[in-house]
Image (tube, rainbow, N blue to C red; front, side):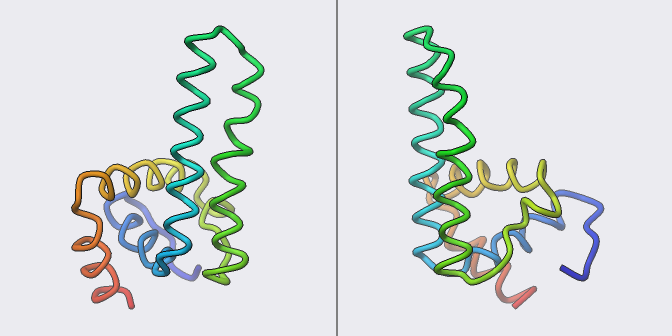
Length: 111
C-alpha cells in the first residue's frame, strides 16, 4: 500500500477495492455475522469465553478471503482500526443495499 491515508473517508474506497471479488466479500460477511452472533450470544448467556472467539471468527474468514481468493494482504496489517470500522461499514452497506454502487465508484476512482 503506497498511499498513506489520513482520513477514513479516503480509506474506505481503497478498502472496497481490496474486496473486489464476491468470494472475498462473502467470507467477510460470514465472519462478521458470526462475530455478531457470538457477541450477542455471549452477552445473553453470560459466557465470556465466547468473546475470545470474536477475533477468530471475524478475522479468520476475512483473511482466508484475502489470502486464497483476493490474493492480497489484508489492510488490517497496516490500518487495523480503520479496517475493522470499514469491515462493519461494508457489512452494513451490503445489508442496506448500497454496497454495489459504492464498490463500483471505488473501482472507477482507484481501479
